[in-house]
Amino acid sequence: MPNNRERIRTLLKGIETGDPEAVTVVNEKKYIQHNPLTREGNIGLAELFKRLAKTSPKVEIVRIFEDGDFVFAHTDYDFNVVEVGFEVFRFEDGRAVEHWDNLQSKAPSPNPSGHTMIDGTTDITELDRTESNRAFARSFVADVLIGRHFDRLGHYVDPAGYTEHNPHMSDGLTALRKELAESAADRIYQTIHRVLAEGNFVLCVCEGSLAGKHASFYDLFRVAGGRIVEHWDTTEEVPPIQSWKNNNGKF
Image (tube, rainbow, N blue to C red; front, side, top):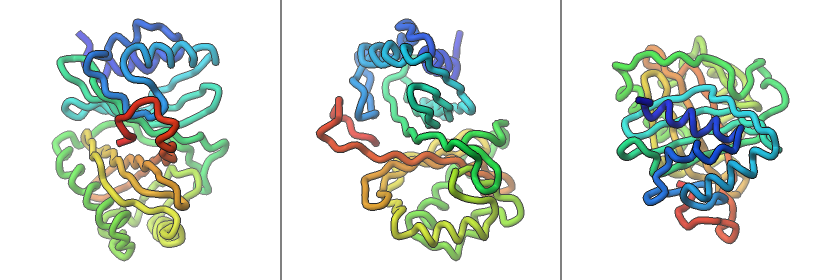
């Protein structure tokens, strides 16, 4: 009997084939779709998969986690455009009933420290520290990214071994402090909507603005020894409400 993690693997890989059976994991009677540009229910997903299949898509599930009724995945998509994404699903009785995502164009080359948006550690450890790591990451976002207390970065980030996967940033505490200070006027975190965790990995879903435009920030942190040691993210502009195909909102 597949668990929810396996069900989402099957669903996402169905994008490659356009197989309508892949979306049967979704409970169409209850399904709430938060991607503003996708229609709700199995029909909406089946249409999307069929359309994407014509582009000979490739789907790589780089990391996948389970947190209670939620499954969240870090994905590498090659459709008619190449994107890195985070997918979040909520389950009831073995079927997906709600979905959120955040997609960003994949950088064509590594960042200044030589890392891509998806490489790095995938091993899930520290399962006994899931809740403490969740609370720690939430505190970091509230204190540093929303509160802008950049002087407290050393309390949260490992000064000796911080690895950064943002395509425009570099490794290390000093580089992170400099980047956050320089981008503070344009990159504004306002609200934490969800914090999902499994062991040493924590995904924070936030709302804010980038260069004055409504934006969604998904930040995945790896925690070790009580400090953040690795970070991946995607940022997506929230489309104007006139273009939405459902009324559920991005968050």
